[in-house]
Each structure stands twice: as structure tokens, then as C-alpha cells.
Amino acid sequence: MLAKVLSGAVLGIEGYIVEVEVDIAGGLPSFATVGLPEGAVKESKDRVKAAVRNSGYEFPPRKITVNLAPADVKKEGSAFDLPIALGILAALGIVPTASLDSHLFLGELSLDGSIKSIQGGLPMAVAAKRAGLKGILLPGPNAKEAAVVDGVEVLPAKGLAQVVDFLRGERTVAPVTVDVEKAFEEGGEYSEDFREVKGQEHAKRALEIAAAGGHNILMVGPPGAGKTMLARRLATIIPPMTLEESLETTTIHSVVGLVPRDTALITTRPFRSPHHSISDAGLIGGGQVPRPGEVSLAHNGVLFLDELPEFKKHVLEGLRQPLEDGAVTIARASTSLTYPARIMLVAAMNPCPCGYYGDAHHECTCSIPQIQRYRSRVSGPLLDRIDIHIEVPAVRYSDMVTWNEGESSVEISGRVRSARSIQQERFRGKRIFCNAQMTSRHLKRQVQIDQEGHRLLEMAMAKFGLSARAYTRILKVARTIADLEGSEAITPPQLSEAIQYRTLDRGIV
Image (cartoon, rainbow, N blue to C red; front, top):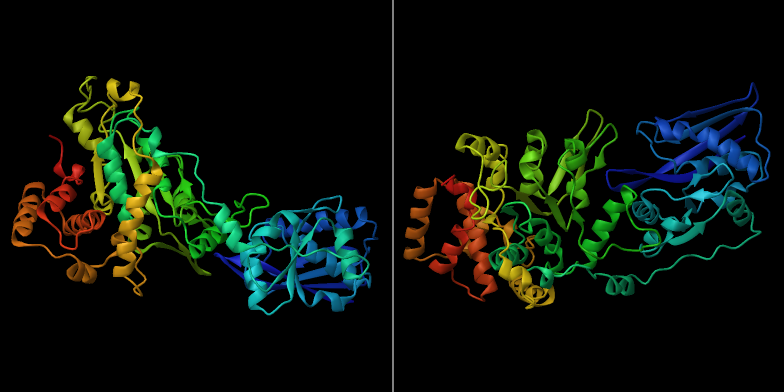
């Protein structure tokens, strides 16, 4: 007796169809799963046995073989439990095989037959639509994220017995629908606001420029200066996510199971802040079966690295490709996967090991060689890829006790949106979304500097020993400052401000 059930799996962030073939034959009782199953898939036999029995059906004491096709791709996760159980029941004649042809089936089974949530509901729904299937049946908590795919019937499942009754025509299951436009409009609210930040006007200005041009930024300052507080509020002034960005971000979070329960779309920009003990696979992505890392989970949002020199050096060096290309490519002997990673990097560090170099109120206990060794943990090539370096001094007492509130995120965001709209018009049709993504070819066309500006840049290059990459970063930041001021030409004062955002290029003074 043979039965086939359509299921799915995720490769990278793309879903693909998996045929679950179940054969029940005579012989000694056994249960074998083939088709390159990983650990969780191999263990499904015990969950399936208990779920079938506890749902009121008899489990056959015969030789059962389960094949997951295509057989040359590794399968992982627990989403194959439900299709395997349905395949066994279909092979026994309990479930009509004709009812299994039009839908994709996914779900992890509990021992009592109830169905638990899975990972990758959204890309699986996309795969079902691409394959021309009528719909997808998956756990209830994953139904809303899958329902954002138009043209696919999304059926929520609670238990194995419910699914069997539905397939036999003895019960109806109401499809889940989501108004994508409404869900997108209702989201996008942040709990933090720049109004709560006391003082630090220089840092706020730098963050406004970073948000306006999509620039990476590094904040250097003593403990308690407010670096983390500032970083957490950066996402509140970046222009709201577009529907396309929201779908991209939700897909990545769906693959790793981070979409909040009963949430259709992620509509606020991600803010990821990994601990400095993170591994390279955790930050960049990877593993035996490659998974997205923090840099991809922050796609279309902010990746905040606090205490930057404390990260392992090889982990930080892995950031070079995503910062340059906006994507991460993970190569293995059997496959090569690319994850999107278009992020704004926000990093923070102390000026020295004790944290008080240059602080007017605390004495630094570090020697110059100690400070140099500490700062050298962050390589020059990585610093070159960070457009803006700023010093964040300790907050003055007069700023802390003032009742006057600073500008709100809404006010700052208004100026940022105006600058971004100028950039969108400038790069229309070029797959460039902000100034930070300009190439050398675009710089020649969009950055026009007069003779005085060239002399200023030449002096800065000679005095600070700036690299060619730092030079292009200065031009990009200057272009953003001009956009914020509504200026087409770039003036020497705007160049001067861009140059002063290269703090760590000046060395220790």
C-alpha cells in the first residue's frame, strides 16, 4: 500500500515542495525514514506512532518506509510529522488519497495528536502558490503569516483527528484571511523616542545623518554616556518599512521561527543586539544546515554591536562582505546559500580598556600602548566600512536635570524622510535606496565639489592618512548632509562636517 502527501521544506529562505511517500508492506514491524533526514525528522516516527494511537486510530504493526523526495537534499525540522501521519492513514485507507493532492501539509505532532507550530510558514505558502496548489494546511499559530500570500487557501490545523475528518469531508475548516494593507498600516509603532535622550546633540545630529543616508555609525564614549540608548532609538527615525521590505523581513524571521504568534507581518524595523560572545555562525549565519545569522535577522533594520572590541576578531571580519554587498553567501560542499543582509550597522565602544580616556571627570589608568592594542582589535578595513565615527562624551549634570525635552523622533524623522525622498528620486530605477549604497560610478555623477572643497579634502587626506575607502565614505556622508539641507551642490562646510565624522582615523592625541 502506497500513499503520497505533499509537504515542504526551506532551503535558505526559499520554500520548496517535498513529496512524502509512505509504503506499508508485510514483514516484521519497522519504521524507516529515508531521503537524507536530520535528527528531528528521524525522531518523528515515535511522535507519529503516539499521535496516531492517541487520536483514535490503530497504528499498523507492519514494515513502514517513508521517503522524502527529493532525496538528495537534507531535510530538517519537525514539520514532516503531520504529512507522515496522514500518509500512513492514507495507505491504510482511512484518509482518501484524492484529498491529498491539492494542499501542502505541515505540522509538528504532539503525543496526544495536537499540532504545534513550525518554522517557515510564509516561504512554504509561497512555494505552494508557485506550485499551483489550491492551498496549505498548517498549524494555527502559523496561519496568519502564511495568509499574507495572495491566491493560496490557508487552513489552520489544531489536531490530527480534525485534519482527518476534514479530508474525509466530515468537518469544515474555515480559511484564514489577512488584509495585508490593513495589517501593514496598523503596525509600525515604536516604544522608544529621541525625546527621552538628554543632551548629546552632536550624537543626535550624527544619527540623523546616518538614518538619512543609510550610513553605518560607530559611537566612542565612556560607560554611561548613553550610546545604547541612542542606538535603540535609531530605528524610530528611519523611514517606515515598505510593504516589500516587510515581506522580506517577515520571511527571514519565519524561517527561524521568530515571527510573533498570530502575527501576519513584521512592520517595525528589526533591532538586533547580539552579545559579544557570539560565534561567527551566529552573527553571519551558517551551521551544519545553514541558517540565517543576526546580520540577516537585522535585514532592513539595525544591527547594534555594543562593546565592539570585545567581539572575536574573526567574527568581526566576517562582517566585511555583508556591509559591502548587502548579502551573505554561505558556501558548503553540497550547496551555496545567499541570505539578504542590507543593514545599518551601529557599533559602540569605550575609548580605552578602562573606559575613561579623554573624560574630564575621571582619570584614565591606561597607557598609550594599552589603548592602541585595545583599538587595534577593530581592524582598519572594518573601520573603513563604517561611514561615521563620533565621540559621545559623558552627559553633563545640567542636561540630565533639565525639564526641557529635545526633538521627538517624529520631528527628526520628517527631515530624514525628506532627504530619503530626494535620494529615491535621484536613484530611481537603479536598485539603490540610499546614499550609502552608491558606487564609485554614482559618486562621480552625484557628488560635485568646487576647488575649495578639493583643497579641504586633500588636506584632510594628508593630515589623517585616510584610505581611498574613507575618502569615498566622506563624499557619501557629505552628499547626505547636503540632502538634509536641500542643497544640490556640496559646500565646504558640509565637507568639513563629513570629515569630522572620521574620529578614529585621527589616531590617539
